[in-house]
Image 1 (cartoon, rainbow, N blue to C red):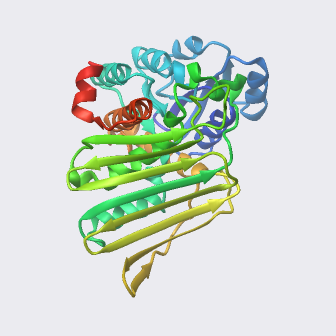
Image 2 (image 1 turned 90 degrees about the vertical axis):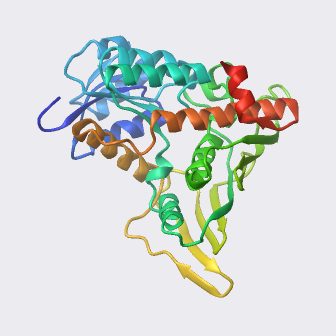
Length: 350
């Protein structure tokens, strides 16, 4: 590893891949050494914006280098397992965008491979690094609302962009829209209710405004049961702007957090967090703003620290496995219109 900066490779340079590249390039402890992307247009854009980075059309050329410490993978969901495996096989640490994979067994294989090689495997649930959503977690851990009993996370937003070559609207390549954004909220709910142990069951309902592709679920709601607590996750993609709320209710009060802007990557959101019970209400003060691109920058910095110092990433492979598991169980619940018991689902998945 470089004595000065952690050297990153990047696989994927679509819309969010370009944001990853900028986050790496702007990180004091990181250096963007190479980018791999198939599209010639994306290759040209990468060369123009990141002149110091080598650009390849085949990610295997990037992985063949021995001067790269960690690789960030921002490719379509379907290839996460293939590319993630190749990164770890090459002896490089891995920052893998969510979802880890489209199958639970593939998540397990990535976790086992990273462990066998002593490599860091981190998953891109950047909301954990948010001053807002992370601030709610700190209040829970400090006992501000007592023992948490109920979590409600809701998102109302404009329809998804198509993604490179329309992959996000191709069910074979995206896997499921539940794996796109609700996966973040499953991760937050499990994080907030960590004191209740792991989830025990999932129930979900959904529908689509796409008669030609009903598996693209615009409206989605799930209930995740824990021991003595539960979470409700709800999303609609048939709205406008990007408006997320989280309410966490405990034995001594409630946290109410909100974030609203024209787009998730906006640098001009309105946001806030209040917590309390009855007339005794407190408002959190923030020492830094919050937003997807700011959290991405913190995620890159955290990954560089993990590689350099051996610290645990904000979202581990096991965390990423759990968020994927909950999405897959929710999809099964939607298909079968009945609750899914996690232990039974795991036995069937093995």
